[in-house]
Image 1 (cartoon, rainbow, N blue to C red):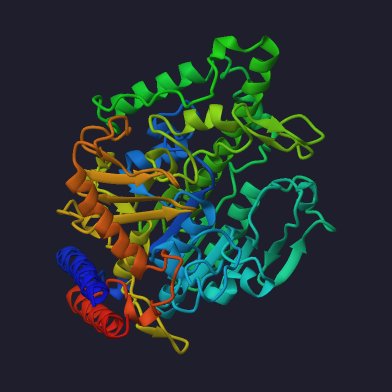
Image 2: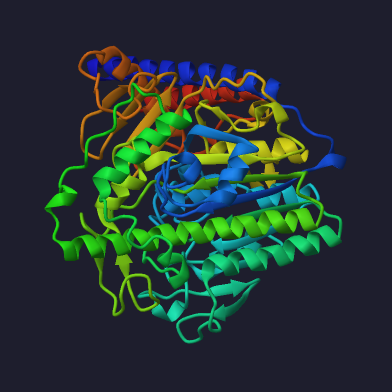
Length: 581
């Protein structure tokens, strides 16, 4: 009997946590949703979402880098730069979240593309039927929908194709990237497909001169021209695999940077840090994170080692340079087609710099770094530079893993007074679906193809585009391979898998140097309870024995009613558990 009483007390406490989370998020989303204004359908903007792979926060010129990115810098100076935009910390989860407007576990891609089975619905390794993609939603609203580049949200052949998730046109690498010049040079099987036709694979290489970054752009521009000719608005999701390892670039692009990195990672990090402060992107009171453990001082390297390291970073820079060249090509084409003014361009990264390859990186290929035959990774030493001024890398939930630039450029839709401005509002991948739905005048469905759809989690960014007040009162949540976190107000609670929670004041210490968890245990407890409630409703919790999909729904367009229903469902479920403990 005492056990039942204790269980009742625990469950009541747990239900109260759901109640607090539901009311907090519900009121926040209600406030935010009233700020968004839907454009008339006759004025639907074109939308281009460009995402790179494994780039750090400071790898663009307009975000502190020495790498030449003049076209992206121009978009930034004629648009808005977001300084606190977040991704999920890894490639597959980020793609799932971007495409669906949900947290990645809700979409079914909590980790990578391995299927953990029906008992773990957050880890099925593909986009599930309980979600819709941006293409499926905007396609219903009259858009021509285009995808080029890396797909990577399902490895089985039936899940390969963007055409199965609402894209009218695609030219894609279904499994990921990693080859650049030809698929046969990659260690694993890779395909390039147009529609459902396999064009290139290990047995058949592209023609001489083919380079993935150029190809994804050139093919996409063909589809853009087609849409403009048909007088249809278009959505183009361009997912570059650059600069993900292995590092491969065109010789003329590498030559631009050869020798520039011989001053070393310590000096480059310091230069970027100072430039970030000068640009106003980071606060001077945020001290530069210390050099990551195990990274040697540059001056301790031999001349031969310095030359090898210079070549690796020069190749990495060349890959980013090529992405920027292709952005220039896109802008020129939009102007030629006279659709530049009413095209929203969003540019972001899928996660932070990649520390794979060991501290100093490596090259296990047959050729020198940068060539088709090479297989080079730049390692933690340069990833620490890419993520300046933050800690950690890809896969982690510390700022170095989840912080991404976001450039928004839209001459017709962004208030001209905001050109070149920065916004420090915390925003997230989940907001891109809400933004696209808002601006396109499309309707987000409650059901699709006979399946009940989880309501989108994000908030439209349009108020920021208009210079209006935008305040996110709802928390942002993160989890990947056991690394976890919550961002709420000025606080961030974060932990590495198997380690205790750390607590940081993001206003005073965004570089996460002063852990306040021991000083503020009640704040840790409060945020932990919110995180646990989210993890339970969002399929993060791996033990799903008592949890069914319809008992833990996400915030909907009418957030208050949804969260009341969530609370009712939770009460009903827990009441049954009390009766039958």
